[in-house]
Length: 223
Ligand code: DC
Image 1 (tube, protein in one colour):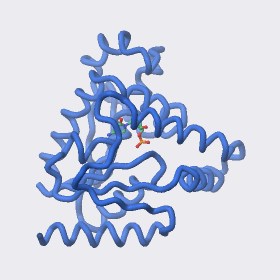
Image 2: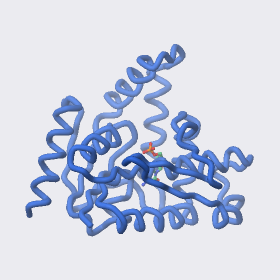
Image 3: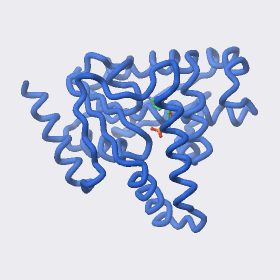
Image 4: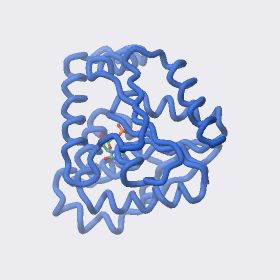
C-alpha cells in the first residue's frame, strides 16, 4: 500500500489538508489524533485523570477502541459507541495530549494505526507518524505554522462557528502548552523525521498548501 505520513503541531491545518488531499488523490485519510482523543474522552467519562498512568494501565487493555472507514470517513468508537461528535472540545484535546505521554496508550493505538496502513492507501496525520508509526512511508511531510498564526486560525474557526466566548490569548496559551508536552515527552515525541519535507504554512493559503501536497504525492507515486 502507498502511504503518506503527515506530522506537525496542533492547529497547523494538517487534518484539513490531509482530508482534502486524500479525497483528491483517492486515498484514505487517517486521523490518529482522533484515536488519542477517543481514549481521553472515554477515560474522562469514567472519572479517570488522563495524567494518571497507574489508573490507566489496568483499564487500557480492555478498552474496546475501533476505527471504521465508511464512505471514506473515519469513525472512532469506544465500546461500540461512535464518539466522533464528542472529541473535538479543547478539554478532550488537552486530555489527548496528556494520555499520549503514556506508553501503554501509544502501544495500543500503534497496533490499530499500522493495521489501517496495511488495509488502505493512507494519508495519516499525527505527531509520530513519519518517525515511529510508518517509518517506511512513501512520502513524509512536516506541516507547521507559527504558534500565533495557528492560534489566530483556531480563533477564527471558533468565531465562525458562533462561539462567543473564544479568547485568542487562552487559545494561544493552550496551543503552546500542548506543543511543549507533545514535543518533550519521553516516548515518540513530536519531531520532524530526517527524511520529511518541511512545509511552513504561516504565509500560505489553504488552497496553496493542498495543491502543493497533492503535487508532492503525485511525484512520490511516480517515483
Ligand atoms: O491532532 P490532534 O490535535 O487531534 O491530537 C490531539 C493530541 O493527541 C495531541 O496533542 C497529542 C496526541 N497525539 C499523539 O500523541 N500522537 C499522535 N500520532 C496524534 C495525536
